[in-house]
Length: 291
Image 1 (cartoon, rainbow, N blue to C red):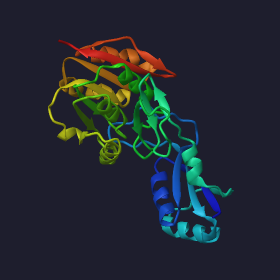
Image 2: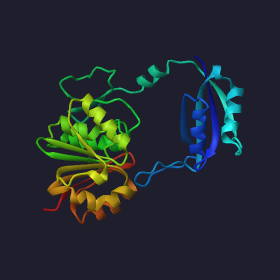
Image 3: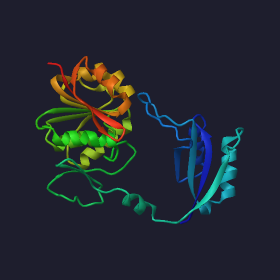
Image 4: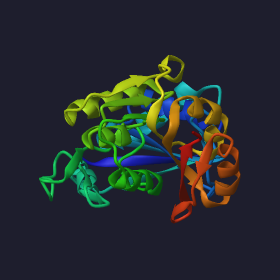
């Protein structure tokens, strides 16, 4: 099959509706990209932010016909005008194979590996987390996730209660369970993330309890992991403190290096904070709950 892609110059406000209408027109995939090199560091809890200048790329089967797509889109968007766009032909490829080839097993520390399901684990005797890339964030490739996995690799997790707050794909929760935690809880604001965590837990033969924040039980943990962002972490500090036992381990990530001092000082009201661990521009903050 051959393909064409329609590339639109849009805006933060118009892109979501344009994306929906392109899907209605029969697009096989719609992607939103930054078209002005504008970083997005601090979405609020539950928000899905977009760039002020947002590029919308829609992939269509070439057989559908450019004129038909243009006519349908104009009708769906009326009375609004169709944004400026260009059309490009796409080389025919085995897209699934190309996508799969981009992901390989990754090692974290001495014991942990993340392996896509289509790969044989390089070290069968290691602790192998079988995890495929998906919609929920967290496949181990981002520095913030790697920082947390490296901490878990070196930690004594056996027979402890662990909370993964902002669990996404469940990668940290699954790692904790495979490392011997007696109870693991995943918390996220997104129901799709909780679903992804449960599916990945089943794939790895571990049990994880998942909750929306409002439903999370008041069960203090020995270890609390939160790989989110500095803004939400600031707001959540009292909540996370209430979910930890005295002397419990706290592991925070999703934090830029320029945000480290302020966030560490904020958490010092509840935790003895340790020096930062950095990878690229991202850092991890560790601490111990006051006795």
